[in-house]
Image 1 (tube, rainbow, N blue to C red):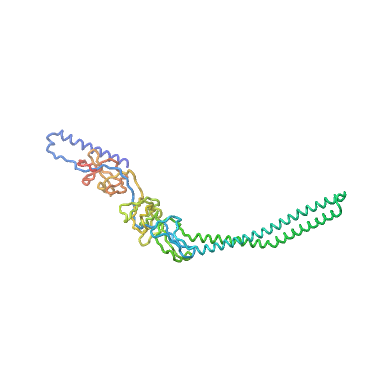
Image 2 (image 1 turned 45 degrees about the vertical axis):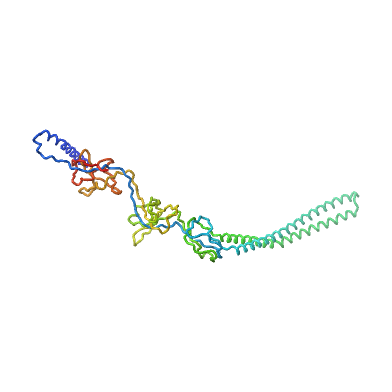
Length: 416
C-alpha cells in the first residue's frame, strides 16, 4: 500500500514538472511553436474551507404536560364555609384553599376538654385523700414516739421520788392512747389505699381517654382548614361555599404544578438509540412564535406504541413565567451530539468517485487535486469534513465536473 502511494506521488511530481517545462520548450522553439494551439487551463470558482460548529439534532412533536396534579378534597364531612380560590389563580404551597364549618367540632372539643378536666379533678382528689391519710399516719407516729419517751422519763423520775404515782399513770395512759391513734391512722391509710387503688386506676384511664379524645378532635379541627400540598395553578374548581362535602369523596379543587412542565414528544423507534437521557433540547410552542424554551431530556419511555412505532420522550422545561400551558402543541429539537470547530465546505463542492466515495477538488499552485473525504453532519449549505481537507484550503465549488485529478486550473473567482 505504501509503495503504491509513493509511486502515485512520484507520478504527480513528474506530471507537474512536465506541465511547468512545456511553456519553456515552446519559447525555445520560437517561431515553430507560434502556430501551435495553446491549451488553456479551465476556469473554476473556489472557496476556502472554514471552521464551523455542528450539532446532530432530532426534531420531534408533542404536547405540553404538567409535572404533577393534585385533586384536593376534605377528610372531614361538612358544609364548606369558604373556598377562597378561583380557577386560574396561582397558589403557594400551604396556602388555604377551603374551610369546612367548624362549629360542631369546636363544641365537641369543648365537651372533650370538660370531660378531661373532670377526670383530672377526680384523680387529683383521690391522690389528695391518700396523701392526707399518709400525713395523719406520720403525725400519729411522731406523737406516739413522743409519748413513749415521756413515759420512760416519768418512770425514772418516779424511782427517785420526783413525780407521784398518779402523774406516772397519767403519762402511761396518754402513751397507750397515742399508740392506739397511730394504729388507727395506719389502718385507715392502708384501707384507703386498698379501696382507692381501683378508683385511681379508673380515674387515670378516664384522664388518658379524655386527652386522646381531645387530641383527635383537635386534629379533625385542623383538617377543617384545607391547604394546597403543592405550588401551582387552580385548574378546576368543583365546589363552592355552602355546599356539602363528604369525607374524601368529593374533589373541591384541582391544582396543577406548571412552574416546570414536560414537553412530551414522540420519537421514532429507530432514533431512540441516539438518546441516553440528559440531552439539551429547545422547545417552541405555536402560541409563542419566536420564543424558545430550554430543557433537558428527563425520561425515555420503555414502551413502544405498536401503531405509530414511536416512544414517548419527556423534555423537562423551566416555565417560571407560566407561559406554557398543559395541552399546548409543542415542537422540540433535541441536540444529540455537538462538534466544535469542525472543517466545513459548501455541499456543492462534493462529488463522487468511481467507487461511490465522496471527494472534493483542492487547488494548490494552480493544480486541482482530487481528494477523497469523510463527511459528517450537514448544516444549511455546509457539510462537515471529518477527514481530507484542512481549514483554509481552496476547494472547487464550480467547474469541478470537467476536472480530473492533477488538472491545471485557473481560479476566476473566490467565493465567500
